[in-house]
Image (cartoon, rainbow, N blue to C red; front, side, top):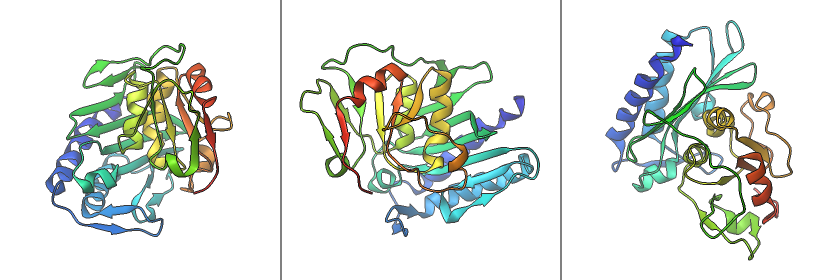
Length: 260
């Protein structure tokens, strides 16, 4: 896995490209009503060019313009979200970032997420660690939910979910699915409720969760499998991320009312 050493430089350089557009960007609306900006397109093109040269045998899956390339050999895919949290990026908010995940045999092998404005760089290592800015981090241990327990929530919580009024903890939304997954994996929050997103929104975070003993499960309790998501289809139902025992406890307070 020493061949992955180049990814940190790649994603940091991609962050520099994004920052050249930050606070000075126009948005367009895609068919799914999400935003895209010139920064998304420029970052994705740069990452693709580097990966084409460095890992030409691997497959590519990326958010913009339906980018997909099957592996020429083996079963590895690089899964790219050029800017996760585009709406926050376009609004001039600080929590957004570039995500790169590596999937092999439909298993999340490695993950990287760089949030330039927040100054956070998350990555997995071949030694089985998750690092935040070079320091090993761990997930929170499960325990009773209390007033300082923290659940990252979906941005449309009010439309599609009901949270029991007896839930004693706090609800937060930062505007980036990958940020939510990384902060849960690194112990800064207990769990995250993730909407029906796409593989590029979760692949890097799943690698970090897995190494730190966490899981990504559908709200019905079944495990999220990447194999059926490699085609780029939307994830079929909402998910919860965190330690298995923790998300079981949080799930008891959340009702999904359907929709989207």
